[in-house]
Length: 106
Image 1 (cartoon, rainbow, N blue to C red):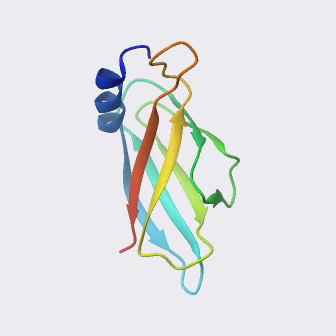
Image 2: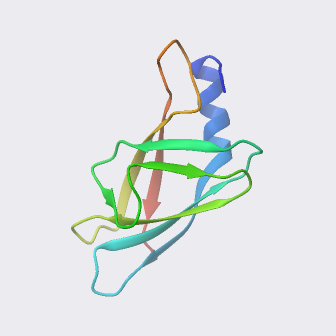
């Protein structure tokens, strides 16, 4: 995807969302499912302060698919943000847009 920031950001926000959040009892690991509603694959680089239990900082979400991330928060948080750089989108030469997804424990 190539385009101006003001056009790319809303498109990405409409394509990717947090569909489920599950917590393990007595654990700081939160299972977060990100759903891709578009026809395009997304390649994301983790920029947040949290690491993933079973994934590296580079993840791929297939078209019309889901990606389960097990996020290690170190503390039991009721709400936190996941920040990503969208590597398969460009808003200027060498500039990738960022995406922030809010996660709320239920």
